[in-house]
Image (cartoon, rainbow over all chains, first blue to last red; front, top):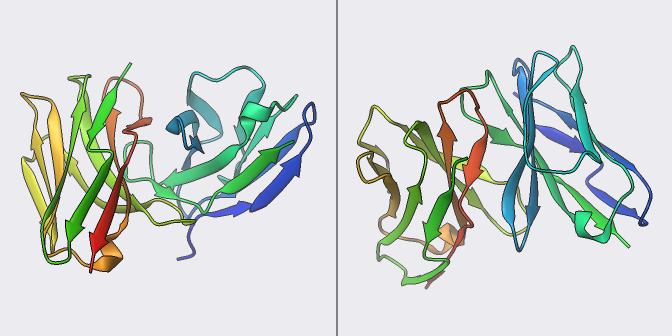
Length: 112
Length: 113
C-alpha cells in the first residue's frame, strides 16, 4: 500500500497570507490527525478527523482550521499567517481513531 | 489534559551498547503508548507500541516496558548500531474520549561507531 502523502512538500508564504495543506491517508484509513512540529515545542496536536467529522481540536487559534472529505483526504488551512506559524506540518492516518497512526512526510511552511 | 515528560533530551552511546529512554505521563486514563523514530529530514516512523493491558513488548533489538502504577514507560534498544542514530519520541493516548497523541519533547540518540 502507498503511504501517507502530503502536498505541497515546501511552501514559502508572506505574513498575512493564507495557506492550504493537503493530506492523503493510506488507502482504507478513515482517520486523519494533524500535528505541528517545531524545534521549540516539539510535536503538537492540531486536530483529528474521522468520517468527515472533526472529533477533537488542539489548543491553536481559530486561524487554524481543517476538514475531511468523503474519500478521507484532509486539508488544513491557516489564515492570516504569522512568523510563528513557520513549522513542519505533519498529518497521520489510522484505520480508526484508536489504532496506530502513520505519518506523512510533512509540509515545511516558511512564513517571511 | 495529558502531559508527557521524556528524558534524557540527548543520549550518546558506543556502538554495541544499550540505550534507554524514559517517559512519564500524567493521565491515568491513558491506554496506548507508541514510540516514533525520526531521522533528519524524514517523517516520524512508528517503531513499537504498547497498550495498557501489557507490561512489556519486544521486537528484535527494541523493547518497551510499561509501569501503569508509576505512570511511566521506557524504550530499550540493545546492541545499538550507527543507523539507530535519530530523534526518538514517546507519546501517550488518553482513553477518555479523545484519541489524540500527546508527545514527549524527544531524545536525540547518537550511536558512536
